[in-house]
Image (cartoon, rainbow, N blue to C red; front, side, top):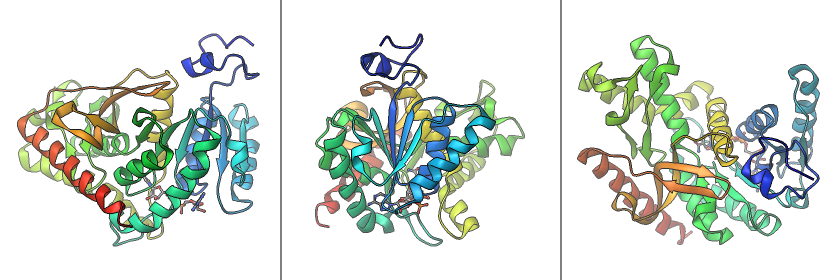
Length: 330
Ligand SMILES: NC(=O)c1ccc[n+]([C@@H]2O[C@H](COP(=O)([O-])OP(=O)(O)OC[C@H]3O[C@@H](n4cnc5c(N)ncnc54)[C@H](O)[C@@H]3O)[C@@H](O)[C@H]2O)c1
């Protein structure tokens, strides 16, 4: 069957499948807050057919049915299935992994390492044989270390194992800048790199408000305050919710990465990706500017960074490398 006009490169590559109009198959593992909102965003945007899976019986089925029942009102094709069986995930183009514990008030992301490593390992052991050509988008925290673990366990080429954090952290920073200056966030550009945590690296040299460089609009103390609030952005929401962590901005950020993989977005995104010498960083995952496409990581884009930004990025990479070495001892 011919691919639909304007179909994504992934859909074209799969043009022999009976899926006219369906662009990709995306599995979302974990049907909690992040997983279910991600599934809704992807299916509602018509980006892909979605399979939602969880270990809890009935949960993904119930969420999928509820989402389907919203489709006549919201006017989208209800291409979503809920399941507890990995056989239903077979042949996925993209697998988003959100399975695992979220933070509770007072916890750091790193406190989740042991428990979530066991979950991510077991998920990837089941996902990889069912979808050997998939691109993995890891979301479970601690993000950088779980992305490394998923790459190790799957044995997939590193270009096909990515982590989502930078799109979210950058969105938070853009929101805080807009609030500070009383402008629409739509006119604010900003990017964060490094790790998803205390070693997040904000790039003042690449932040603009309606085209004006941010450092020309606020003083150094305000910049520091905005960056620190971004670093603590997840904890701020955890403290307010008191039970669980953020999911609306995270799911929007995951959907953005899926859109880029589908070839529908040609933007440089901050992505947790495997570096092979870029920015002087080799053989570790860390948040870097990247272009994505149907094969996963298309390229890491070596933006010009100030000496201070580059130093902080390299330090973040070394921190992640050390934590990943700790993973082996678990
Ligand atoms: N990378 C980011 O920027 C980012 C942002 C937000 C949340 N997160 C992380 O995403 C994860 C999920 O957060 P949430 O709010 O959806 O949590 P949640 O508790 O609402 O949902 C987690 C789901 O995972 C499921 N699960 C547990 N073990 C599983 C397994 N072995 N197989 C399949 N499913 C399994 C649970 O049953 C649950 O439904 C957490 O680790 C959280 O810290 C990351």
